[in-house]
Image 1 (cartoon, rainbow, N blue to C red):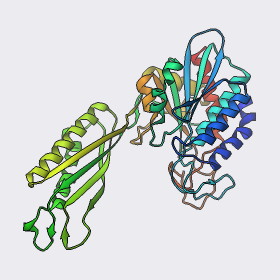
Image 2 (image 1 turned 30 degrees about the horizontal axis):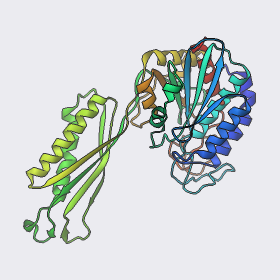
Image 3 (image 1 turned 180 degrees about the horizontal axis):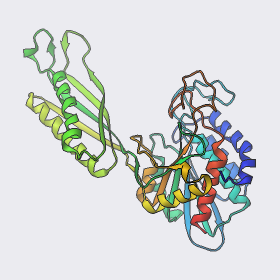
Image 4 (image 1 turned 90 degrees about the vertical axis):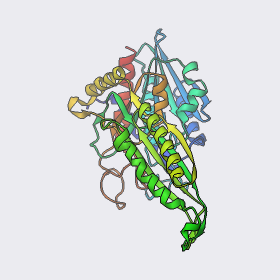
Length: 394
């Protein structure tokens, strides 16, 4: 690997900042302490900042040369509402809150790059360092854009990166096109007529109707969608009844829908609504159908993905830059990619050997109570950010 020596030397100090952030996790739109840490470091290095965008967001502004060209680098800052199982010194000090997705590490890698930019900015233009709140369900990227992120800080393209457990450290993955799915929720409430379970003919039982709907929804995936298009409908909750001998008045279905395209999502939403309405009607009942769109699909633009790949190859070699396997997980960086060209890449987090064991073998996947970011990624991820900016604004 061709790492920047100054970043290797600075990695222990940046790692200490990362562990401090890990020990003090904050949920979406509550990242006040984390934002304070980021702002203090950027200010210490002489980097001008803008605060408060998207509630707790921080934007660092690094200018060099005379060009008006600009690009953005983004890291997320928020944690998850879950209990940490780790017992190492930097484990969460806040019950029920944990950095289980590595946003503490993403923040650290971008801080390391910022420190290097402050020492030596080998480019002509502006790099905007975007420290974003509320990726975990809050849509912080959307809120920063609403608050004028791209209007106040015009940029040609924006880049993001997420650690990915399981692959050996020193590897990247990047691809053009969809790399993460849209995230959507639905709720169907079937209204029947309750009664004695021993005399079902006197009521309207919504439970069999719900069973029919669950089965019928899957025909959308198998019969309405092109086989080569990806889509998932998962009914994850069914709520009905309070007693074994009583037919309930209503039954509620809830779940999630994931797709890689808006066109497939539009079709699924329409067909689910039609199936729910007409299935209920076929049994003499009515229902309500609610569909909430959370995050759109994350779609990398071809030019920026190929540019990022070439930078990665220059650092770790072509054999260590793989193709992103699209995942049905969702990411609110999608909002930034809807507004600007850009690329969202993966950086390998290792097999889990960097953390304490005892909570299960293997790579310790994201959103796992024994997850921890691998600090050996800090100089590598920061080298990528620096080299990417230098190449883009050459």
